[in-house]
Image (cartoon, rainbow, N blue to C red; front, top):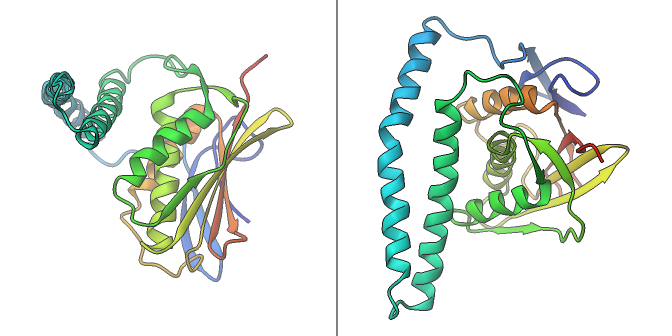
Length: 242
């Protein structure tokens, strides 16, 4: 079993996992704010915030134009559905922009009570837009409530799904299951891919994003072989206090 952890559960703080072959991973520990910053990080962070500031208006314009088009009484049903999805994706992007523009607040300031299953449904809906294979979210009748930064956790789930769909390929299957036990919420992503180390590596940015987000939400991600033949990735988060 391979794992990547945040500071809220047992074990080390967040880290970056790198596959080294033979089902072995190297985990580089990182501080509570994620991986150590590169040289010139202050300038880079400022540039990122400037970019986020500059694209706020175009994103808002996309939302407004799509919303206006929805008011056309002669709009075909299929087009209506596509426009709704455009608005949903633009809203998600707007949340990310807003989050990145306001990074100076105390840790946990953006945490909100939310259903982990709803975040999984949103991430899966977005992934299906570009994935040709089968992506299924197992039914979850009861809400699994967590108190988290929704942007961070949605980003973790999106990265896990991106890895899984890339591994499974256009003819494969990816499943998501939500559960809770012993004070922890669990989200499991499984795929029919070839398993660890059998697909080309990516940029590594997804790992850094997951590590940073795990630190803020006090979560943990574990990896191992799954029953579908590929990888089983499990995300644990503390349940919201009753």
